[in-house]
Image (tube, rainbow, N blue to C red; front, side, top):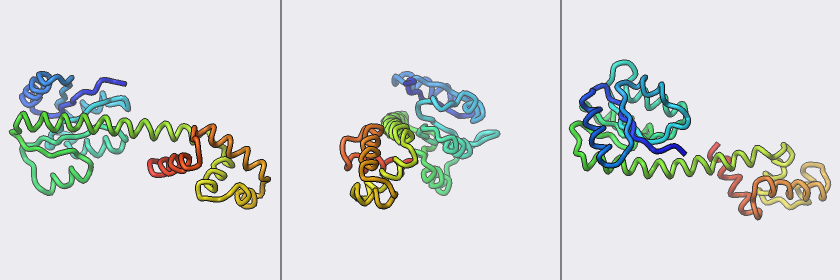
Length: 203
């Protein structure tokens, strides 16, 4: 896994420099960018960390970058830092998933607290994503018929009822169920139901 970094995106070079010094002194690995476009050039699915993001910048502004990152499904907690924050803008940013919306000048202690919280959230989100991807990978191993059998099984149907519903033999249902448990790694029907539910909710 890549090292978590703090990405500072602000068109004001003095802000970038001061935040770099503050965060580096606190033990973080920091990269600064003076435009959203510059940050997007290095941004990949493996980019790992949180962003301290200015609102008003030439070209793509902060909220537009937030929207683009969401479109790309990138896990990067965002802390907005702006000299011109308004309540409607703050509300929109938070509703769109930002961790916080701070105004300049900001107290160093408050910013460092928010960055620490962002890193903690990042770890939780990464674990959730890894779990979701692992379950999706296991579910993708199932054949179409096995998926049908699984859905009927977790819905509470007996092997006999599944066989009647799908027009196959009882023995064939048993074979399918055995393969389903093997492919998904589930040890019992309850665990299979949980995996199935998690997969549906996180697709």
